Amino acid sequence: MANTKSAKKAVRQIARRTAVNRQRRSKMRTFVRKVEEAILSGDQTAAQTALCVAEPILMRAAQKGIVHRNTASRKVSRLTASVAALTKKA
Image 1 (cartoon, helix red, strand yellow):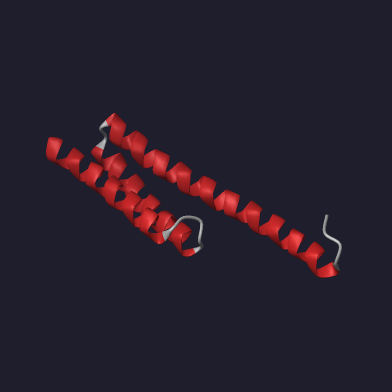
Image 2: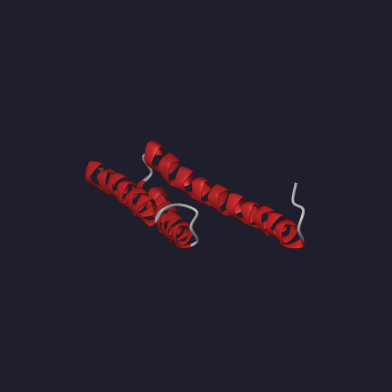
């Protein structure tokens, strides 16, 4: 258990930051899932609009340190490629 005043403050800060990060991570995963579901359903326009919404959220998560920037770029790249593949099928 934290004994010093500064350690107690650090515990409070960590708890607050953890809660914020959990919300951001959850939001990011939700929007990625929406894109993946639209891709699986085969709806090109829904997938495209979901990707346009998810991309800035992913990059913002990388900026805030929720995920590594390369991870965010890779996810955006793969989702974009999947949406583009839907276009070629149609």
